[in-house]
Length: 265
Image 1 (tube, rainbow, N blue to C red):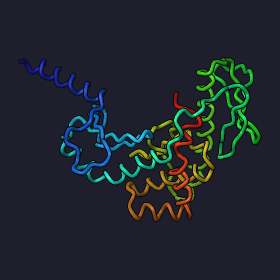
Image 2: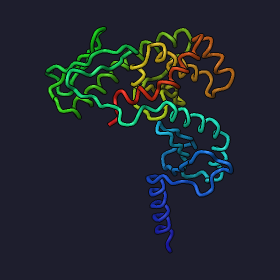
Image 3: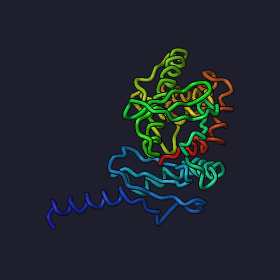
Image 4: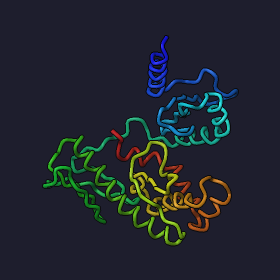
């Protein structure tokens, strides 16, 4: 077999493994919860993902051995299983009612339930107004899929404005500022802080009480100083936001509801 053909076969194998998660044939002894492993061409380092479905996925970079990856998982197993059980315990009831778009929908923003109204609008992709007594979605398209997309865009824009203000205020108090802000819709995280200081936050946090949103922003800002979750990190979070444990507990108990309020699809 020529070297070029062997390289092509190796590449095809990596692509297959990256696209198809598979259960490990040799998980750590005594494992209580199943773990899938996924080989990734793009991942730079090994990581453990705990999805809101309760699924645990071990993501293995292309150049790392499976044995080393499973040693990494063994060190983080307690956290992963605890997180998976939390998601399972607080998962919304199956068959959560979808948005009806008939004038009877109610959606919480900043922890306050507000009627959701749909009105004609000139903008092709719609716009969302968050008022004290209602949410008003204005858009030309009225089919449910388009309305759902417009609502998510509007909530993400509202989250960005709220996040920018909180990060500026808390960053000034901390004496450190993020280099950038990204608003997205991750499955298993509420926020993250990249190695270059860019902070990502879930737009779904705008549905939660403001202090919960603030806690996640403070948490990620504190990673600008301390990358891990050791005592110095949590001490800094406590100084920046005394009583943060209440907000952290709220997320553990109600986080699944933020995903159920506006379904991903």
